[in-house]
Length: 453
Ligand SMILES: Cc1ncc(COP(=O)(O)O)c(C=O)c1O
Image (spheres, rainbow, N blue to C red):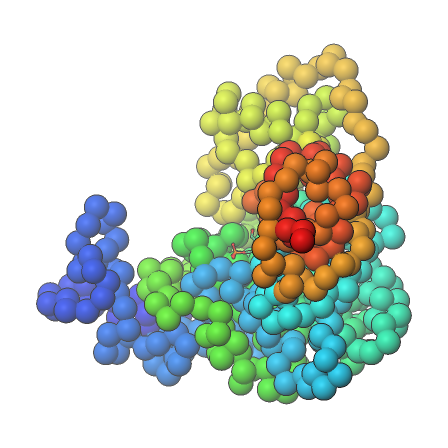
């Protein structure tokens, strides 16, 4: 597959032009990549009005994913999420003064809340029948979605699902998309953790399973620089979305998107088209055997997407496990909480499988005979009463208080640790005793609440 953006910049790099344009480093500096960091010079195209090399490369990505249209983001899925919300609500005539409603599984990333604040959207939450016991998981089913849509007085602008979630749990996107489409509702998926899912022997990518629009953080699971992401619009998405999508991205993006990130996205097209499917399949086989070995050493493996190891044990907390991996084996996990340590792998970790195996074997041996930890019963998801709109709360004056003092107060900005950046209480909700317990159990000691008086 061709790489027009990468080729253009490399030609410019060696052409010896006098750089009387931005950026100010003029191609020099200590990072070593400055020569490749350009701006919208002649021939370089323009991300938000792409007609040349960027349009061609985005089209290549679209072909790889079989989408109706794919747009690049140099500002992560966070930008795509805001754009997807815009695509769900633009054109809705707000004659009754009511906010457009998006029906969402509760484990949204905080970018969703910021998007709701900017666009003055009301989020109705879908809660799973059974709590996952983790703030990361909100395992809603197709039935939960159907019931939630049917319960509303009017149609929501969209249903919004996060899948895979931070622990790697995957929602039944096929069933959920059918439930949505039977009711004439569009399905949006935050697939930040699943850009690679399209290249499995049987695609598990949300677009293949019926989502209308989805965002992928290419940088999370593909060899792309941090910030590189895709907004995909399905061929069968509601009319007008493909045409509006660039405008939607432009509203929330910088007018100076990084050409380094765009070159990286461009090179990733070639990487994917050049035998990635086969390499991925082989790597996943190896990872599956590693999973089996870890289980044989006594570790529990949470069901997750294929490129993730979500590991726990009754004898050690996720935090301690991640700490021991770091301290004793120089292994840095993506995320840990009281139960799980989450390891995110890609094909680039091929050479690391042996040391992961060794580390878990030795830690497992060391834990033998250690009594099981006192694991309190998992807290149910905190369902808090709504006292003001997300927008009002996020734009309000706030103060910082401890989780206990936050009791009964209205959440202003989402208090979350990043990762996983999933709000425990949503802006505008009254903080209940359960939410306060959640803050404490997640190690959050400062909560932003709306100032009184
Ligand atoms: C589920 C989820 N959605 C969205 C995002 C935002 O993605 P990005 O960092 O690409 O902006 C993240 C980031 O971790 C995430 O975990």
